[in-house]
Image (tube, rainbow, N blue to C red; front, side):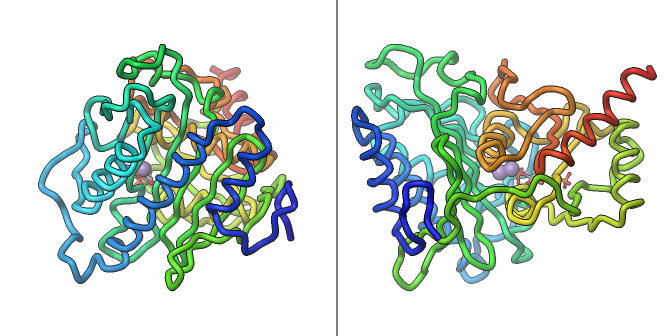
Length: 335
Ligand code: AHG
Ligand code: MN
Ligand code: MN
């Protein structure tokens, strides 16, 4: 099995990135270096996660992030590791992180890129040895070089992503990313300290029979979502929800399925963050042949107005996302 360029399974991530770059005659190598920086930080975070139980880095950090959520120690560690790698790499002028109230200026004013990142996704699962992840989006700055990045640089719609990906720290650790020409997955070999191409040219099934949603909030779902969940049950779909978006998404991407986080009483705009959770996964799912919407609009076309903006998310196999959209549309028409 090969990727679209004919690179075989087993190609190292570094070599893969380098070969991709050769296809763009004017590429400067900065995006390639940035992707390698992310992979390096992911290896370090992977090490911390693997030893979490031994290092006293499980549990709460004792502070909340800007969104009022309790930070876990590993949230803070992962945030530090990724910021350090991106700052040292030199290609990024500004970082938007779930764990930081404001943007982080790296001081690399010549850096062409903006990174939006959820350093550790699924933090409630850290202490219980369940898969967690990292999600990232990369944008090219729109302001002139030689200054700090601006708000306009950060608040770009998902359609302007130049690359996006996630790392899943699971039964094995993987990095999956796209630069807009298909999706490829790399598995980490701990003994060699390298990511290797293991899932070339990932294509998600058009439909599936897995639905992932926190059904504990069923009573406050929009009517259309309730009806779709009942439709899933009527058709004996499998319910799978682990509570780490990356893990739920990754499973559904490979097997076919839908992940939903709608508006609820507790989270009136949904819970997930547009800039560093929804957009990256939307780019990946579309590149794999799937779909991502907020129930009526394409996620990647939403223009963020604030850094930590939330939005409802319906993402996965195209036919399943379209089905829930139909129910939601019918609900609007009735009202
Ligand atoms: P994070 O740990 O980065 O704050 O994200 C948690 C998110 C996501 O990973 C997961 O799917 C969702 O929260 C789970 O929320 P509920 O517990 O409300 O289902
Ligand atoms: Mn998250
Ligand atoms: Mn997080």
